[in-house]
Image (cartoon, rainbow, N blue to C red; front, side, top):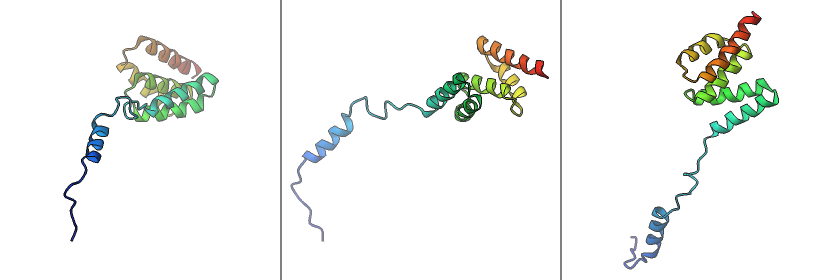
Length: 119
């Protein structure tokens, strides 16, 4: 049989409660930074350095996990058209119909015009 201790010290119990409920608000969970942001930033860095294929791969990875982000979606569609990916034109045109950002609209239309001019 197990012997119970009748007079256990309340100090460890109090210590657990204070650690649990009085943790600072700046814990690791509060400062979580989404890795998609890093993927997008690395893709943009690759794009500025002139490596469009690496930029496309990184931005495509970010776009798969967060397709509603307008900035990531714009760069994804822009690079898809520029690199002449499969079904890039109809998908980009569909995205343009739902987009409200005029700057992204004009830039993507310009890329589409360059694509159609090459044909």
